[in-house]
Image (cartoon, rainbow, N blue to C red; front, side, top):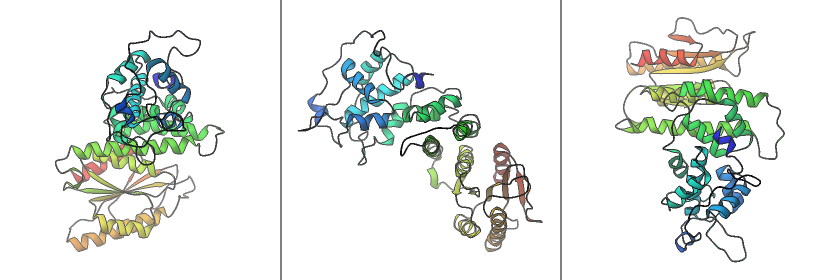
Length: 360
């Protein structure tokens, strides 16, 4: 795929045919040198863009996309305007555009200046990365490609794929792309360096994509995230599976239902969260093995949700109890509280449809 192919060297690398060199502006202009924001080394920019330092040096040598700031006693460094152009270059090469054409477009683009400047940590602001990917078209799910990008810590390619696959259907995004990729990473024997772990890195990128999607859906509501309407509380009761709960919450917001997430499903935390959020319904994600063993105090959390819902109904004068949905994964069965408005669902799609039927 294009993302994998463009990971290290652009086309026309050492030993290959060299593209025709375009007529390019002179690098290192005075404007770039005085651009606001901290300057970055080659290694720092390469790490943030998910490319090899050799690739940046090649782009500098061939196309003039090099660092423009000069500091006494040190190598040249990249300004915020330099990084902005490199983001455009990176996006276009991921799309499959020839490096020479991508470089021409990057050099002709308007730098983002302060808005796209790196933050205090040296990382380009999220807005700059999102803007660089904003005009890309959808792509088919490619779990092996996502795994390949993750194990090479190709951050730009990972974010690219996460943003482009099923942009309006986060459940399909999860089931067809992210979950298979995470499962494959769990099964892979990978020896990495200190601070390198592909699974958590991919999970972090997935959380970032969910935040982006939730922000987009909130922006389509007249009052944004503060708009009135029913709220669903999604509770994670399985350690290490919190991401799945965030996926369902994002899916609810895609359908116009506000959602809040409680990642720690301790009974006392569930009770407190229900009192704070006053939700229309609660969803708890639980895993049960064949022998009925659950991860964490799952059954106790369900009981706490039922009791808190009954108390909420009494305080508000509601005639009906708050529905509690239990998303149960695994082959086991658990005994749920009897006589309460408790619904057992086995799939994400089933949970989504049943909750929507209650709140609409």
